Amino acid sequence: MKQIFPIFKREFLGYFRAPVAYVFLIAFLVISVALAFSRYGGFFKAGVASVETYFVFLPWIFVILAPAAGMRLWAEEKRSGTVELLFTLPVTTVEAVFAKFLAGWTFLTVAVLLSFPMTLTIGYLGSPDWGVVATTYLGAVLMAGAYLGVCSLMSALTKNQVVAFVLGFIVCLALLFLGFSSFTDSLEKIFPLPVADALANFSFITHFDAFTKGIVDPKDVVFFLSLMGFTLFLNVIALER
Amino acid sequence: MIEVKGLVKTYGTKRAVDGVSFAVSRGEILGFLGPNGAGKSTTMKMITGFIRPTAGTATVDGIDVTADPVAVKTKLGYLPESAPAYPEMTVAEFLGFIAEVRGFRTYDAKRSQVDRAIALTHLAPVRNQTIETLSKGFKQRVGFAQALLHDPPALILDEPTDGLDPNQKIEVRSLIKSMAATKTIILSTHILEEVEAICTRVIIISRGKVVIDETPTALRARQPGARLDEIFRSLTASDV
Ligand SMILES: Nc1ncnc2c1ncn2[C@@H]1O[C@H](COP(=O)(O)OP(=O)(O)OP(=O)(O)O)[C@@H](O)[C@H]1O
Ligand SMILES: [Mg+2]
Image 1 (tube, rainbow over the protein chains, first blue to last red):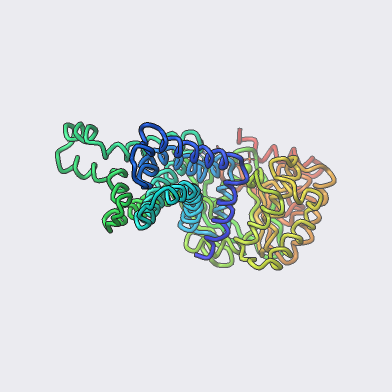
Image 2 (image 1 turned 90 degrees about the vertical axis):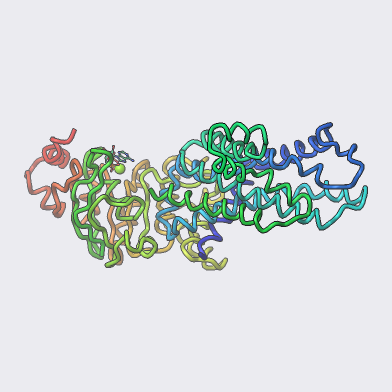
């Protein structure tokens, strides 16, 4: 497992060797703040100092940000042929998958933490419940990891970053929509009820919502962590086949 | 030191490598020859553990690649065909990364390995240039530097002199030759003179099969007076 660190380091710094990372971080901040202040966000209307109005859009923003952060993880290695270099170094597939995932996850965590000035503003304007702030951040980071696991897997399935982005986007969007009743209602028409229920249980919104209300339900934590574990497992299989 | 037995790789119905066997010991430089698509690169990829053989085994120092790939990879230095490297990194950053993965973690250990590899392959002038801006020959040298970095007991070099200027070709050949005494080296090439100049043994692969395994002198003796490319042609004529 000691091989994880150099690969992690190369991959994480790699985000900043290209301007793409900065573009996405800035776009993330601008969009998230703009949405919070928009009439959909109701940042002013709410009348209470809470971070919820800011974080309520996070599951949506991650649908774009996670594929953007995850698309290059494997597709780019395959396209440029460096995957042959990486896998003839003394590294196991599990270590490489884990190291790259951690790098992407750290990058997304940085993005989430960059919203901290916004949180401080809320703290200055009113007195938010800092416990809720903490659980919201925890939920956001866990959700980011689950999204990224999906996107890393998609990236391992193709040589083309654009294809990886689109695949990641579609799967993430589907996972998001599972939380909407209109969407799950139509699922119930296609699948038997237990299956539809099980599918609806995969919704990111439902699992994230509890965190923004200050509740850390082990069920939600386990959901995000096991989704990460499962996608990374498939990721290893996809690379070893 | 490197032993290959009945190695087979099939892609769909195509047998890219069809039962290749040979053994190379320390001090030998084995030259791989063969027409395009003969299976040279595929054989090398199986020895280095990048792709899994359909059948057969490859062992390095008695260790089976499929059984303990990481142990084999620590013993090998590998230059893949067309020398892939991370384009957005500088030469020093890239070699530093390889050094770290190869276990040189302290600043001094890393620095001395990188400096040594840079000196051997004459990369000092481009040390801090990003790899994507390098010319083909310099990229090739970065790939070579990466393979040499940990001073491995065995080297597998897929077309090491490809894209180098005539001076560099001679330079790299003499470098390979100078390392031969203490290492096991397998290289592939399309330059027949190269084989004569540095290899102690030649293997000609055609359609995934070994057709010749002998010394360069014996190869030349097959048709006295003929040019090497004529001999090569007559041995691999069936391969389109
Ligand atoms: N991933 C793959 N899928 C299908 N066929 C493949 C794949 N990789 C290699 N091949 C086929 O295997 C055969 C051997 O290829 P290989 O790259 O080993 O040849 P080579 O001897 O290195 O040729 P060259 O001199 O051109 O480098 C070729 O016919 C090639 O088309
Ligand atoms: Mg080849």
